[in-house]
Length: 361
Image (cartoon, rainbow, N blue to C red; front, side):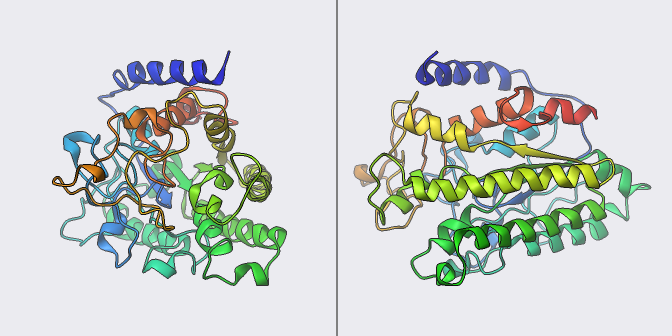
């Protein structure tokens, strides 16, 4: 079966899947979300950074057409997974306390432009690094869980934790034009630096009570326009960059397996996103697998130009869900839906357990 036919079938099936995934009783107590702009549900709205998505055309296909701060035209992978679990979308934790819902069902700590290392993303302002997100999670345990629950440990052990991080450590840090990181580390050293730092945070999360953790690997960064602008690859992607990414993903897989084998009753799941994305870009099943749906500046700024109704040229494409990319670096809602649905019930994205199986262990 050709990749084009396969992706078309998955897109059709996912429409039926999401139409019947509601649950009156949540399958797990809570969903906690960490990482970067692939999972940011609006935290950067409240931070002094240029990395924002709280303006049109972002969110044009989100319920009520709201620009919530999600870096896509609609829902994120974690939104679809929350729907399956019967949970509300985890609200962004980085907002004024008087606005923040006092919920037991989870929060979103992910922050666009940030990464595993504290310095990543600081060239465009302030964002919450993974270390800072861990501190915010600890604060939410003290403020929102401990006063209300008789057993915080049981609540956290049954909840699901999701991560998407490391992308910006390469895009904006290691391969960043204004960074000297490549002069200080070769690719193997930098990868090990990231893996060690991520491992420490995951071990800390385990000590705080998490037992069911899903960590998504990096996508094919060598196929992004922000990389291709500065390289002249022979093919459609910079395979030298992709090889560095594949090495990180390989080390990530080994690290998660080691944590699962050494930390009692833990399940560290790897979300395989690289090959799904790579195949969709190289062997497209969508009408456009290369160009963003929204208009971008084309000068290295990856996000959408704000829509001005009086300027037709700034309007996004009319078929966003036939595009792989929404802007220069973020996937469209259609791709997020495919990744989520396959992670939930399939056998090729989230391994060794999919979400449906993870809920039951």
